[in-house]
Image 1 (tube, rainbow, N blue to C red):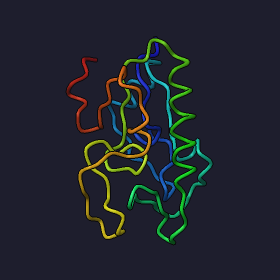
Image 2: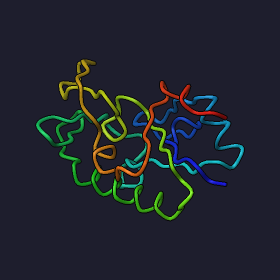
Image 3: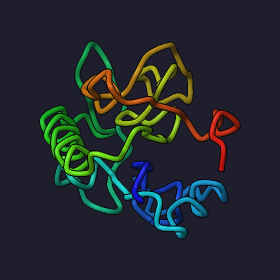
Length: 144
């Protein structure tokens, strides 16, 4: 039974801005066991792999070359939520911390200097409250 939606990069999909992943063995196990679907709001919103890194500044998302990609981030967030809502058994969404889409608790500050600030990514801000949202660092809260 599908119970989770997981950021695709956490299951080994090379969807990050630089074409890499951030595989997490617990996430991969959930997916491999058929308990999860994979999402990547950035790719779902039409952003390419690889792409310039993006950060949130003044409520908008900009790439490192100054392109406003806010619309792509919002569209991807809505498409990801639409996909998740097709699975009524999903109760938890597991996301990649610090991402401009999936960052929960902290994101990069928009200066492209590696500095993080408190805040949430675009996708996180769109997720309905009925879902539990965890980062890869909070997986101890899941009973496998």
